[in-house]
Length: 346
Image (cartoon, rainbow, N blue to C red; front, side):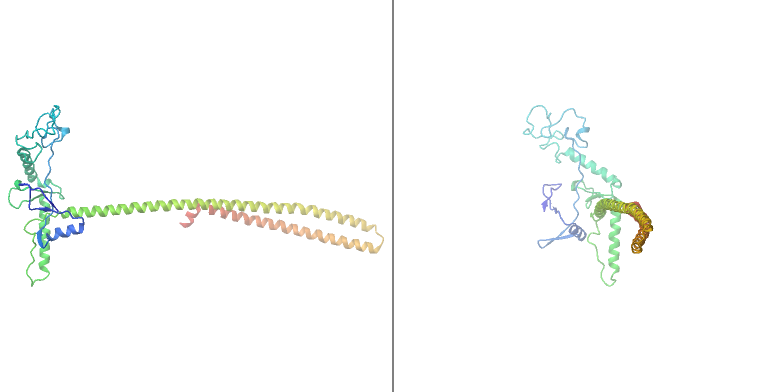
């Protein structure tokens, strides 16, 4: 707790308390009471009084230094030129507004106090222009009548009164046999700015939603990046498989080509040998020798026939295998294309 500077004197019976917990803050304001040291104190929301602008060049209220029309910079202690070479940190204090013993920017100055009073008077006349979530504390010396403590928009005040009366009516309707419950703050409009509290909570929820959305978008980007990386790795794998498949296919084709090239000369050689043996067999007189050569000749013919059949089977198998390998290669290429995957998923 800390003591607040009063408006009429330096000390006040009001004490300002800052609460760190928002829930406790709202609970204390809604109850209107606070128990400390065995005593029950009335609680109200702290409202700052309207601030005024004071120029750092001429020490007059109502404008800033950049808008000041003064030619010289005045010392707020003595009122002389601040750039005259004198020591203005230890000069005599005398207000150049009212000639009293205080600094020119002090709120003790009657001239600044009059300016502040006129400012509050204009705010009172134009309360309807105040934002609905703004309330000002009116110092005691500037109040027009007793009980006037806060300056706010009348529409907000009427809304709070209606809400209090509705709550009172609802409380009395609960049990018709009991005495009506009176709200301790019903006589005066509560200075608890429920609108600002709601705005704060809504803003907090909006920020949380925005943070969740940002985190979700970051996670989606990470997943997309990982997916693209995996797809690139898969594409590289498919390319390696396709390359290996082509290499194996070329090796098989080379083997078939080699075998196909070897078979015809072998068959042709056997046919030549068969013809030579047949010519030689015609000139043989011995029957036994002729029979032996006939057996060799028959064996060679059977071998030639078998080799021709094997060559035909090999050629046919090579054509079928080539057709199958072409189909597998097409399927592999389709699997490597990501667009093909997306169209299949759709």
